[in-house]
Length: 409
Image (cartoon, rainbow, N blue to C red):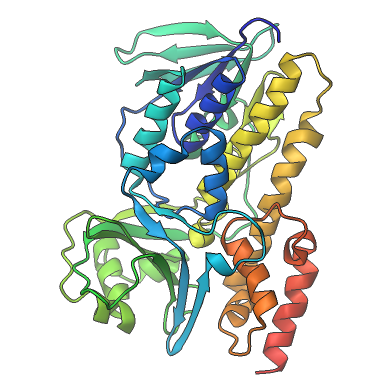
């Protein structure tokens, strides 16, 4: 191993903390520059079982298990009188059969603390203002918590800045997404759901009674609260006078939510994000690579964001380890293409959800157990398991399955 190489990571979210811990384990010095001070609010509370593989790799599994987060064993889908349940224990792919539903403020802070425990250095409230990759080593210009600027060199830079998308902005890498512009309204509530009326181990995805490309999420936490959100094209929300009115009116339009939450206390402001799908022209370049949402974000419908972020961290740490040991590496072949395979699989299913085909599959009342198990693996995040035909040939397989479900109704 060559000396102790220094890797600067922009952002202390899940991909940054996982990458930092993995690099520390390999003998390198990981330094994280985080613009915020943790804990801080973040959306994206429902993890997938595939995430647990990367948390285990990073040596953080026991800490996550001990934290008291809400167990997640699967997903319930509802649309009017249709109801379909997917349990991760029934999935096709080997691996974890459960995960957690987490309040991201506490979860992200926990991962950052674990990364620090393993030797990762984190500078809080340090914002990257500039990046120069023209020299022998990357050079970043940073402002500290007192707004004092300084420059720092590294052997490599990983951008884990999420929706901040630091390097894509600074290096003009941003590329338009081919997804339609969608908006999400969301909040946290004290749900006061009566015992036995809802399995808190399941995330609930509900399709609007009349508008099939509008959907709701209900993500319960272990402390009697939950995350509640609505996703649709902006015109759906623009029909109301403001986000608060739109949110409450649309929740009232969904009878199962109204029945489940009659005593809920809406004690947190309604948040909104719009046009969140994003892409880049390149996931790597001389001296840097992009992790997670800094590179590409699809859509919240299958909770893919944190999974893709952690996978990118794992891949990048392995490629960097080989590069630092003077082994031949090809970032396109070894990082971008493997990551993109899973992203493209998620994209296939996200697109099919909004076009209605995947909804037809999920609510099909004659599901074959072996095919349902393969679809369940994708819902569990195992989109890199090419032994699953619905991963390896995702688009043609899913197209055929949609047609079968539609013609046999």
